[in-house]
Image (cartoon, rainbow, N blue to C red; front, side):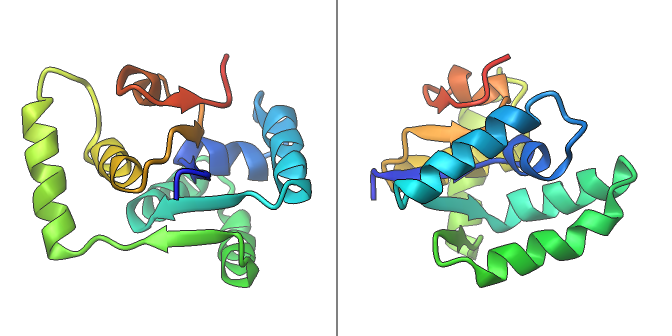
Length: 138
């Protein structure tokens, strides 16, 4: 599954929010990805974080379209957090307690490693710190 791209919260936000400074790059990437029939992966925690961010920044109206597009897409899959994955993420998080990574970041890294995903549609520098390629560089 190494041909997948991870979609992080900042990537989702950039795609949906036209005022975001990475919106143009994110939309252009997604257009190229659609032409190339790329596949994507994200997690339930990223979706939770994305909905929370959209609502907190006054973009709650974009939550329904987000879920509708994910439900309709055959190009994206959601990795769900099982009790085993939670324990694995907790251990990963504790091993990297010197980093400012959130638990959601750690879960993303665990999923990316498990599925040989090398790049993320994100502007979050933590992904680069963890050894992944970020596609929305500032």
